[in-house]
Picture (tube, one colour):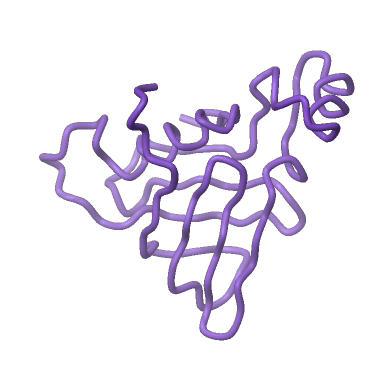
Length: 132
């Protein structure tokens, strides 16, 4: 990740499952913010993160302020679709599935909304799990 990495990605999703009437999504390194017509929902990644190895220790250290270690996953992702069909299914109850906006297929993969979100998550020490 370069020093000029994005600190957040803001977009209008093509669809959202798990929350009604979402008009905007913002992904930060430490949280997901969803805006609907009448409310703002904030999902902190530390609250939904799944650590796979030594998770109990990493979760405790992260909550004590020692930073996120162990690259915990915060969502499943599916990229094997046209741009508007690509999605991230963020863990939690209920899970929130955010579909990407439609983009030109001529955009290089590294510049797509899908990839940019993964880059912002990495700044916070989080990853997503590939379903494809």
